[in-house]
Amino acid sequence: MTDTIYAAATAAGRAAVAVVRVSGPCARAAVATVAGKVPRPRMAALRTLRSDKGPIDQALVLWFPGPASYTGEDSAEFHVHGGPAVVSSLLDLLAAQDLRLAEPGEFTRRAFENGKLDLAQAEGVADLIEAETEAQARQALAQVEGALGRAHQRWRSDLIEALANFEAAVDFPDEEVPAQVADRARPYLERLIGELHLARADVDRGERVREGFRIALVGAPNAGKSTLLNALAGREAAIVTATPGTTRDVIEVPMRLAGYKVLLADTAGLRDTHDEIEAEGVRRARAWAAGADLRIWVVDGSSSAIDPPPEELTAGDFCVINKSDLNPGDDTGRALVEARALELEMHRVSAREAAHVGVILAALTDQVVQRLGGAEPPTATRLRHKDLLAEALSRLEHALAVDGSPELAAEDVRLAGRALDRITGRIHPDDVLDRVFASFCIGK
Image (cartoon, helix red, strand yellow):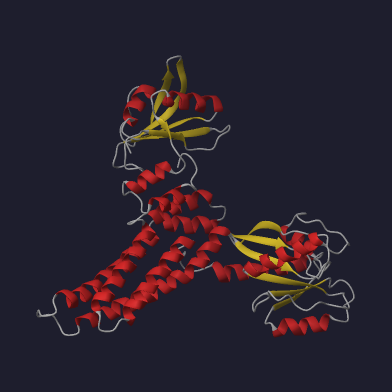
């Protein structure tokens, strides 16, 4: 990392202030050339930025000598007026000094390479940038502050204790070591396995906080799914007509409930059809519903012939008997019986009544909070973490099952440690790093 890099750290366009960052061995020379005198470390100073053609702006300049900087290198920030002409002139001035425009995530990657962040913290930085809701920001901030890294240190301590006992049994079989020394590793492994199981189970909650809790509206054509979607979303997101089968594709609407991101989806009416386009819509509807966290079976309460419940429903999903403002149909009772048998939460509403919609929103909010809330954010939040935790668990459980072969158990423990080290980046294949930092924006 001998290059000195630069980039705008704020979004393009007009703004009151824009920030341009520089990091690398030539950062001090760049500040001196552009701003004249280099400010005192970590003290903002007002400087006139100049090119060969004259002044380009009055700016606040900050100087961060390494290693006490975000990247661990000599770094600087220029806080300039946010007009495109000013920012463009400053970027051109830095480019003229043979500085290189940073790649996406390169500042944070340098922070990782210089030991300022572990890989899980770097992922938290990306999540914090992308956070749309309070829950996402809270979870990402916990990651940036090292929640997963601290858990990793606990796990690593137990691994070391277990490995020490196994290796004592292997390396010093004839020395004065306690009898059955390998058995002393068991409590450490059992405790570690329990913690890893909990962390792995919590990954799904972290993923849902990051990506959004998925709710699917399913049911027969003309049951009122699109009307209910529009009412819950508070806007005309889906077309509503009296013609059955109007919705042909999945319509996703992002929402916020209790500070959590939710994706509410209207789907094609479920029925047998020879229409090729509608059949594809039904297939997509079933696939989306199968992968959803919660399904709402919308039933036309005025119909005299109600279809059986969709096969994707599971206990805890909702059954909404819609159109309660109309005369009840002859088949509504059967739908209620089937909903109770499936252990669905039942509501009788009219999607055109604001009070009824409020009841559904409150019930959905309770479900989201119940499934995603917790005293603390999840320590592991990504599929990558989940896969590595699963690999470590498999190795540790195999180590416990090995009887009378401490050398084999010791090897399993070492391999489990390597899997856990890859979570925080102690061991990091370059392709993993490339994938992680490719998701960053330029300037971070």
